[in-house]
Image (cartoon, rainbow, N blue to C red; front, top):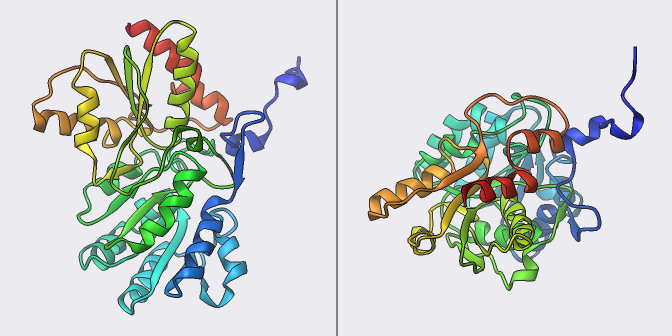
Length: 330
Protein backbone atom coordinates (compact mmCIF):
# COMPACT_ATOMS: atom_id res chain seq x y z
CA UNK A 1 0.00 0.00 0.00
CA UNK A 2 1.32 3.42 -0.90
CA UNK A 3 0.78 6.44 1.30
CA UNK A 4 0.03 10.01 0.33
CA UNK A 5 3.18 12.16 0.37
CA UNK A 6 3.36 14.18 3.57
CA UNK A 7 3.48 17.51 1.74
CA UNK A 8 0.04 16.89 0.19
CA UNK A 9 -1.74 15.87 3.38
CA UNK A 10 -4.25 18.26 4.85
CA UNK A 11 -4.60 18.14 8.62
CA UNK A 12 -7.92 18.07 10.41
CA UNK A 13 -7.40 21.77 11.20
CA UNK A 14 -7.83 22.47 7.49
CA UNK A 15 -11.51 21.64 7.99
CA UNK A 16 -11.85 24.88 9.98
CA UNK A 17 -9.02 26.77 8.31
CA UNK A 18 -8.67 30.54 8.32
CA UNK A 19 -9.67 32.34 5.16
CA UNK A 20 -6.64 34.58 5.41
CA UNK A 21 -4.11 34.21 2.63
CA UNK A 22 -0.46 33.78 3.67
CA UNK A 23 0.85 37.13 4.85
CA UNK A 24 -2.57 38.76 4.74
CA UNK A 25 -3.41 41.32 7.42
CA UNK A 26 -5.82 39.98 10.03
CA UNK A 27 -7.52 41.09 13.24
CA UNK A 28 -7.99 38.68 16.16
CA UNK A 29 -11.58 38.03 17.30
CA UNK A 30 -13.05 41.25 15.86
CA UNK A 31 -16.56 40.45 17.03
CA UNK A 32 -15.52 39.86 20.63
CA UNK A 33 -13.49 43.04 20.81
CA UNK A 34 -16.18 45.09 19.07
CA UNK A 35 -18.80 43.83 21.50
CA UNK A 36 -16.59 44.81 24.45
CA UNK A 37 -16.09 48.28 22.97
CA UNK A 38 -19.83 48.69 22.44
CA UNK A 39 -20.59 47.43 25.95
CA UNK A 40 -18.22 49.99 27.46
CA UNK A 41 -20.42 52.68 25.92
CA UNK A 42 -23.76 50.96 26.53
CA UNK A 43 -24.32 49.30 29.93
CA UNK A 44 -27.47 47.58 28.61
CA UNK A 45 -25.48 45.24 26.34
CA UNK A 46 -25.24 41.65 27.61
CA UNK A 47 -23.73 38.51 26.09
CA UNK A 48 -25.07 34.96 26.01
CA UNK A 49 -23.91 31.75 24.39
CA UNK A 50 -24.95 28.12 24.10
CA UNK A 51 -21.71 26.51 25.26
CA UNK A 52 -19.81 28.03 22.34
CA UNK A 53 -18.18 31.13 23.82
CA UNK A 54 -14.67 30.22 22.71
CA UNK A 55 -15.82 29.25 19.24
CA UNK A 56 -17.85 32.41 18.60
CA UNK A 57 -15.35 34.86 20.18
CA UNK A 58 -17.88 35.58 22.94
CA UNK A 59 -15.22 34.59 25.48
CA UNK A 60 -13.62 38.02 24.94
CA UNK A 61 -16.79 39.66 26.24
CA UNK A 62 -17.14 37.13 29.06
CA UNK A 63 -13.68 37.98 30.34
CA UNK A 64 -14.28 41.74 30.17
CA UNK A 65 -17.81 41.68 31.64
CA UNK A 66 -18.31 38.44 33.62
CA UNK A 67 -21.33 39.91 35.43
CA UNK A 68 -23.01 40.62 32.07
CA UNK A 69 -22.26 37.24 30.48
CA UNK A 70 -24.62 34.25 30.61
CA UNK A 71 -23.66 30.67 29.72
CA UNK A 72 -26.87 28.88 28.75
CA UNK A 73 -25.41 25.45 27.94
CA UNK A 74 -26.24 23.36 24.89
CA UNK A 75 -29.83 24.59 24.67
CA UNK A 76 -30.33 26.93 21.74
CA UNK A 77 -34.07 27.40 22.30
CA UNK A 78 -33.37 28.41 25.90
CA UNK A 79 -30.64 30.76 24.63
CA UNK A 80 -33.07 32.63 22.38
CA UNK A 81 -35.84 32.59 24.97
CA UNK A 82 -33.57 34.03 27.65
CA UNK A 83 -32.24 36.69 25.28
CA UNK A 84 -35.82 37.67 24.42
CA UNK A 85 -36.72 38.00 28.07
CA UNK A 86 -33.71 40.23 28.64
CA UNK A 87 -34.68 42.40 25.68
CA UNK A 88 -38.15 42.82 27.14
CA UNK A 89 -36.58 44.38 30.24
CA UNK A 90 -34.58 46.89 28.19
CA UNK A 91 -31.30 45.02 27.88
CA UNK A 92 -29.55 44.59 24.51
CA UNK A 93 -28.59 40.91 24.21
CA UNK A 94 -26.08 39.40 21.80
CA UNK A 95 -26.58 35.63 21.73
CA UNK A 96 -24.01 33.42 20.00
CA UNK A 97 -24.18 29.87 18.74
CA UNK A 98 -23.47 28.08 15.48
CA UNK A 99 -25.59 29.23 12.54
CA UNK A 100 -27.02 25.76 11.98
CA UNK A 101 -28.36 25.63 15.52
CA UNK A 102 -29.82 29.14 15.43
CA UNK A 103 -31.55 28.55 12.09
CA UNK A 104 -32.65 24.94 12.42
CA UNK A 105 -33.25 24.40 16.13
CA UNK A 106 -34.33 27.78 17.49
CA UNK A 107 -36.25 29.29 14.56
CA UNK A 108 -39.64 29.28 16.24
CA UNK A 109 -38.32 30.95 19.40
CA UNK A 110 -36.61 33.69 17.42
CA UNK A 111 -39.64 34.19 15.18
CA UNK A 112 -42.43 34.37 17.75
CA UNK A 113 -40.58 35.56 20.85
CA UNK A 114 -38.26 38.16 19.28
CA UNK A 115 -39.32 39.01 15.72
CA UNK A 116 -43.09 39.23 16.17
CA UNK A 117 -42.82 41.79 19.03
CA UNK A 118 -39.82 43.36 17.19
CA UNK A 119 -37.40 43.13 20.12
CA UNK A 120 -33.71 44.03 19.94
CA UNK A 121 -32.31 40.49 20.09
CA UNK A 122 -29.02 40.06 18.21
CA UNK A 123 -28.18 36.53 17.07
CA UNK A 124 -24.53 35.83 16.21
CA UNK A 125 -24.11 32.71 14.10
CA UNK A 126 -20.75 31.01 13.81
CA UNK A 127 -19.66 28.76 10.91
CA UNK A 128 -22.02 30.28 8.30
CA UNK A 129 -22.07 28.71 4.85
CA UNK A 130 -19.06 26.59 3.95
CA UNK A 131 -16.75 27.73 6.75
CA UNK A 132 -16.30 24.26 8.18
CA UNK A 133 -15.54 20.95 6.56
CA UNK A 134 -17.41 18.94 9.20
CA UNK A 135 -20.31 18.13 6.90
CA UNK A 136 -24.05 18.90 6.82
CA UNK A 137 -24.49 18.88 10.61
CA UNK A 138 -22.39 22.06 10.88
CA UNK A 139 -22.51 23.59 7.39
CA UNK A 140 -25.14 26.35 7.51
CA UNK A 141 -25.51 26.54 3.75
CA UNK A 142 -29.21 27.51 3.91
CA UNK A 143 -29.36 29.81 6.95
CA UNK A 144 -30.14 32.99 5.01
CA UNK A 145 -32.82 31.18 3.03
CA UNK A 146 -34.43 30.10 6.29
CA UNK A 147 -34.24 33.54 7.87
CA UNK A 148 -35.12 35.77 4.89
CA UNK A 149 -38.80 34.97 5.26
CA UNK A 150 -38.93 36.11 8.89
CA UNK A 151 -40.56 39.55 9.23
CA UNK A 152 -38.62 42.27 11.09
CA UNK A 153 -35.32 40.32 11.02
CA UNK A 154 -32.20 42.11 9.76
CA UNK A 155 -29.56 39.84 8.15
CA UNK A 156 -25.89 40.88 7.90
CA UNK A 157 -23.24 38.87 6.03
CA UNK A 158 -19.90 40.63 6.75
CA UNK A 159 -16.82 40.39 4.55
CA UNK A 160 -14.02 40.94 7.05
CA UNK A 161 -12.93 42.42 10.37
CA UNK A 162 -13.83 45.96 9.26
CA UNK A 163 -17.43 44.96 8.55
CA UNK A 164 -17.76 43.12 11.85
CA UNK A 165 -16.20 45.85 13.99
CA UNK A 166 -18.41 48.53 12.47
CA UNK A 167 -21.58 46.42 12.32
CA UNK A 168 -21.74 45.48 16.02
CA UNK A 169 -22.55 48.94 17.44
CA UNK A 170 -25.03 49.57 14.64
CA UNK A 171 -26.80 46.29 15.35
CA UNK A 172 -26.94 47.15 19.03
CA UNK A 173 -28.53 50.50 18.22
CA UNK A 174 -31.03 49.18 15.66
CA UNK A 175 -34.65 48.33 16.36
CA UNK A 176 -35.77 44.72 16.09
CA UNK A 177 -33.92 41.41 15.91
CA UNK A 178 -30.75 40.87 13.88
CA UNK A 179 -28.75 37.92 12.59
CA UNK A 180 -25.00 38.30 12.03
CA UNK A 181 -23.13 35.64 10.04
CA UNK A 182 -19.95 35.52 12.08
CA UNK A 183 -16.38 35.19 10.86
CA UNK A 184 -14.31 34.34 13.92
CA UNK A 185 -10.70 33.91 15.03
CA UNK A 186 -8.07 35.69 12.96
CA UNK A 187 -10.29 37.41 10.44
CA UNK A 188 -8.79 39.06 7.33
CA UNK A 189 -8.81 42.85 7.10
CA UNK A 190 -9.57 43.80 3.51
CA UNK A 191 -12.05 46.64 3.23
CA UNK A 192 -9.80 49.24 4.83
CA UNK A 193 -8.06 49.51 1.44
CA UNK A 194 -11.24 50.62 -0.34
CA UNK A 195 -12.34 53.79 1.50
CA UNK A 196 -15.19 51.77 2.94
CA UNK A 197 -17.46 52.17 5.92
CA UNK A 198 -20.22 49.77 6.94
CA UNK A 199 -23.72 51.21 6.88
CA UNK A 200 -26.55 48.96 7.97
CA UNK A 201 -28.87 48.37 5.02
CA UNK A 202 -26.48 49.78 2.41
CA UNK A 203 -24.49 48.23 -0.44
CA UNK A 204 -21.22 49.83 -1.55
CA UNK A 205 -19.34 49.84 -4.86
CA UNK A 206 -15.80 48.93 -3.79
CA UNK A 207 -14.20 49.25 -7.19
CA UNK A 208 -15.44 50.27 -10.66
CA UNK A 209 -15.08 48.15 -13.78
CA UNK A 210 -16.16 48.34 -17.40
CA UNK A 211 -16.39 44.65 -18.37
CA UNK A 212 -17.83 42.70 -15.43
CA UNK A 213 -19.85 43.50 -12.30
CA UNK A 214 -19.77 41.19 -9.29
CA UNK A 215 -22.38 41.58 -6.55
CA UNK A 216 -21.14 39.78 -3.46
CA UNK A 217 -21.62 39.32 0.26
CA UNK A 218 -19.71 37.83 3.15
CA UNK A 219 -16.29 36.32 2.61
CA UNK A 220 -17.09 36.08 -1.10
CA UNK A 221 -16.51 39.82 -1.37
CA UNK A 222 -12.94 39.05 -0.34
CA UNK A 223 -12.79 36.47 -3.11
CA UNK A 224 -14.43 38.82 -5.62
CA UNK A 225 -11.77 41.47 -4.98
CA UNK A 226 -8.99 38.90 -5.38
CA UNK A 227 -10.56 37.56 -8.57
CA UNK A 228 -10.84 41.10 -9.93
CA UNK A 229 -7.11 41.57 -9.46
CA UNK A 230 -6.39 38.26 -11.20
CA UNK A 231 -8.68 39.16 -14.08
CA UNK A 232 -6.74 42.36 -14.66
CA UNK A 233 -3.96 40.09 -15.96
CA UNK A 234 -6.41 39.01 -18.68
CA UNK A 235 -7.34 42.64 -19.47
CA UNK A 236 -10.75 42.18 -17.84
CA UNK A 237 -11.98 45.19 -15.85
CA UNK A 238 -14.18 44.13 -12.91
CA UNK A 239 -16.49 46.13 -10.66
CA UNK A 240 -17.24 44.74 -7.18
CA UNK A 241 -20.40 45.67 -5.28
CA UNK A 242 -20.43 44.57 -1.64
CA UNK A 243 -23.86 43.87 -0.08
CA UNK A 244 -23.25 43.14 3.61
CA UNK A 245 -26.93 43.60 4.50
CA UNK A 246 -29.05 40.92 2.87
CA UNK A 247 -32.25 42.09 4.55
CA UNK A 248 -33.28 44.88 4.22
CA UNK A 249 -31.70 44.80 0.77
CA UNK A 250 -30.28 47.88 -0.94
CA UNK A 251 -31.90 47.20 -4.30
CA UNK A 252 -31.37 50.75 -5.52
CA UNK A 253 -27.57 50.58 -5.40
CA UNK A 254 -27.35 47.02 -6.71
CA UNK A 255 -29.79 47.48 -9.60
CA UNK A 256 -28.08 50.66 -10.69
CA UNK A 257 -24.91 48.61 -11.19
CA UNK A 258 -26.67 45.66 -12.81
CA UNK A 259 -28.70 47.67 -15.29
CA UNK A 260 -25.81 47.76 -17.81
CA UNK A 261 -24.46 45.51 -20.54
CA UNK A 262 -21.58 44.18 -18.40
CA UNK A 263 -21.30 40.48 -17.54
CA UNK A 264 -23.02 40.16 -14.15
CA UNK A 265 -22.48 37.66 -11.35
CA UNK A 266 -23.56 37.20 -7.74
CA UNK A 267 -21.14 35.61 -5.28
CA UNK A 268 -22.19 34.17 -1.93
CA UNK A 269 -21.09 31.62 0.65
CA UNK A 270 -24.57 30.11 0.71
CA UNK A 271 -26.75 27.89 -1.42
CA UNK A 272 -27.98 29.56 -4.59
CA UNK A 273 -31.49 28.85 -3.25
CA UNK A 274 -32.90 31.66 -1.13
CA UNK A 275 -29.78 33.75 -0.57
CA UNK A 276 -28.11 36.68 -2.33
CA UNK A 277 -28.69 35.38 -5.88
CA UNK A 278 -32.45 35.02 -5.43
CA UNK A 279 -32.62 38.30 -3.50
CA UNK A 280 -31.02 40.05 -6.48
CA UNK A 281 -33.20 38.18 -8.98
CA UNK A 282 -36.37 39.14 -7.11
CA UNK A 283 -35.36 42.79 -6.97
CA UNK A 284 -34.62 42.77 -10.71
CA UNK A 285 -37.97 41.27 -11.65
CA UNK A 286 -39.89 43.72 -9.46
CA UNK A 287 -37.99 46.66 -10.96
CA UNK A 288 -38.34 45.42 -14.55
CA UNK A 289 -34.61 44.90 -15.08
CA UNK A 290 -34.30 42.12 -17.64
CA UNK A 291 -30.88 40.53 -18.05
CA UNK A 292 -28.87 37.42 -17.19
CA UNK A 293 -27.01 37.12 -13.89
CA UNK A 294 -24.71 34.15 -13.24
CA UNK A 295 -24.64 32.78 -9.68
CA UNK A 296 -21.46 31.77 -7.87
CA UNK A 297 -22.65 29.92 -4.81
CA UNK A 298 -23.15 26.54 -3.23
CA UNK A 299 -25.32 23.89 -4.89
CA UNK A 300 -28.73 22.83 -3.62
CA UNK A 301 -27.42 19.70 -1.92
CA UNK A 302 -25.83 18.46 1.27
CA UNK A 303 -22.11 19.10 0.95
CA UNK A 304 -19.18 16.81 1.53
CA UNK A 305 -16.93 16.87 4.57
CA UNK A 306 -13.24 17.58 4.13
CA UNK A 307 -10.56 20.24 4.06
CA UNK A 308 -11.95 23.70 3.36
CA UNK A 309 -9.53 24.64 0.55
CA UNK A 310 -10.52 21.44 -1.27
CA UNK A 311 -14.24 22.01 -0.71
CA UNK A 312 -14.13 25.65 -1.80
CA UNK A 313 -12.45 24.66 -5.04
CA UNK A 314 -14.85 21.75 -5.59
CA UNK A 315 -17.93 23.93 -5.11
CA UNK A 316 -16.67 26.92 -7.08
CA UNK A 317 -15.92 29.40 -4.27
CA UNK A 318 -12.17 29.62 -4.82
CA UNK A 319 -10.59 32.56 -6.63
CA UNK A 320 -9.34 30.29 -9.42
CA UNK A 321 -12.81 28.90 -10.04
CA UNK A 322 -14.32 32.40 -10.09
CA UNK A 323 -11.75 33.57 -12.63
CA UNK A 324 -12.40 30.53 -14.79
CA UNK A 325 -16.15 31.15 -14.72
CA UNK A 326 -15.76 34.78 -15.77
CA UNK A 327 -13.34 34.00 -18.60
CA UNK A 328 -15.54 31.22 -19.93
CA UNK A 329 -18.59 33.52 -19.92
CA UNK A 330 -16.99 36.49 -21.68
